[in-house]
Length: 485
Image (cartoon, rainbow, N blue to C red):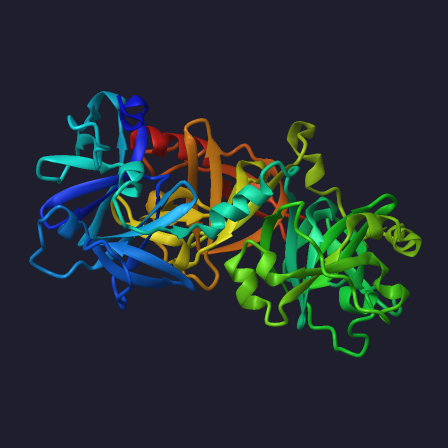
């Protein structure tokens, strides 16, 4: 029995003429438009030519010629198949669906001649006439005189194999400068900060920021690093960082992204002459090395200055400044003294037409919503198939799921990746809002979706920015979506 028939799996289904065909989703790399396919020197009569895939010369196989079933119209797409570290394009008319196929409905197929069978299995699928034939990448690779091209991303994965755990960085913009801050340094973010009266002033200390009933010393990060002392402060937000003796507020223009970096990523050395002020920086991070399309679009200067958490915590003058946190005048006990003395949860809040929260530990990764990562529409409206770092997953528009459709654009949209026992699901949201402490209220949950248990009312934020919003259990929603598939 073939591997395709041995276990349940997910398949991408596409059509050539009247033939429905499929590939296992781990072999379907992406789908490209069948435009500008150029001739290539090749002995095989089944090769249509070569397609420029972002600088990679992708050979394209004409399945209609191979099966001696020419289509009535020119194929519209190229399905990219990956196998054994190499890539090949397959001409097809269109992509139909993504199917989750139970093993009991999958029938193995084999050739009686002893030669590899191009169709290794078949299964019935809704909306398809007859059975869907599953193509075998191994059999495709055995076709005489058909060339494949090296999969550069697979080679990169091999180079990363055996590396230690990735580290998370928060990418921020401060005026026209970009910084990467180790996430273990970040306590929370404060959007549209309130500036209480403060006597604090200095070379890089620019007053205070109100947070959680306290006035926290505010730092101009470029000035601290000696990279913009004369620039006017125009940073409306702040990242609150925790030091041994207190907290500091790093003023920022905005958050670019949150990324997970391989520990094998090397930093460029700092140029000579920056002086002692740059001691909290330990190098420059190339934008091309950051797994974020949004970061690469923002990084016109091509790099992020990396702020080392160890260097910040070890800088005595910063730690001394962090001791100067003071209570706000007339401050009351904040949300920390919620009913029953409950401890705060850390939540990430985002826009789905209105602000919604989710436990931050449920979000395994945050990705930009870029069209280059989408390989096909899947299922119905609001569901797409994405690939990130060669890992495919379905993305649902969260506002559609909760019954309140709201536009999501690539400019500010984000994908929240959520892992559960059944797999990984992405949720598209309009924009990220904040990372904040939150506390349960006594109100009962309300909801508008058949999939999930509704919103849990939470008191979110700190003094001066408190609001009551609903919290979604994304793990539960992901599990129920996968179970319903």
